Image (cartoon, rainbow, N blue to C red; front, side, top):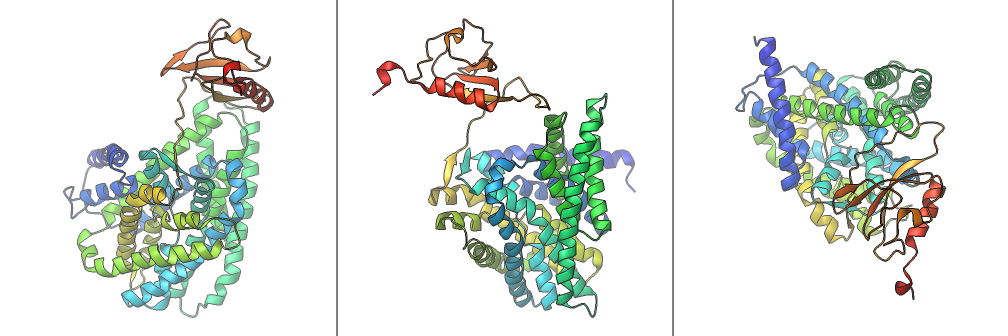
Length: 491
């Protein structure tokens, strides 16, 4: 029996190694989640760490807690202004698309692995959701992004398709383990699951925003504690009312992200860090749970199922779901290829193990293999495919400023960085000579990678980046004045 101190030592070492390994991800474009899994496998009973871990129920519970923090943070970070226009195609992909992916992959898995039909469908359901975080971490490491509307569409789909995958997984798990359960019984269960989850998420959003506006805490550090407690409460209330807890948590995070409340920026940063802790702990735990030697006999069959998922199920579901929408073929092809499998499938793969169904270990190992193969094959080729389809764009180089502004009620202004055009008539003039609206403040200037504190006599130079505090109307007026050309540059 390991002492408490030794357990803490291993936790500290594994988390530290996982974080440091993210630098490898940035340098070689290897998805960081894959590295977290490798760390767990190396620390496991068949690795150099020789840590024996086989507590399925604990692994499942850790996975659910991690998923709650990841999904809540994802909703909180979603930019509704960009997302609003793609809600309909994103919603179709995250429901009908997930169902089509699950069914096609499930039939193939049942045939390839010689599984009963419902257990094949169970496997297909487990791997039916996608993970955009892995996609964007790879693109970020290569300093590229994707053309609109791919980025918000991917973010919304990956954030909202997990509830459907969870519903299908639990549904087919019931069909596999409970005699007399028919597939027709899943229809009313679906509407209750999604409807109650959406209702709880909506009501909890209202409650959370009300709590933040009414509750004036003396200690800023207590605000994230409130969001953790209310996020967990959202999940529990939805589950107790037979609703989809993950959908409720995502909607609560999404609604909270659009509201204005005290300490919003610090809360978002806290939950971003909490989500990373969740991913590290979850992947390392699941890496400890797997036995690499058990994966070897399933390489052939696992690779076939992965090929079906990547080249048939995902592309077919994407193209069918997006038929009514005005997206070009290259964009549909890109959406098909970036459907990486990530954290959720491996968490869901513990459900059959915890339920004790006959083929649970085979399903878990195949899912584990599919996630590794998907992340490695698709993940490492995303930059190449985006360039091939001419859908890559340079990632905007956003400067980090040593000033933060917390938008609260009663203040109609935001911090925005504005670039001075190289041929602007403002160049060579002092700030006090510019046509700056009265309520538009230039707080800082970035010039040649250095910060300049401005005054009225500061002269504007070409390429200056101005950190401006203003409302939308005044900001527009100021940007127009900067866009005026010098006389020698006018045609």
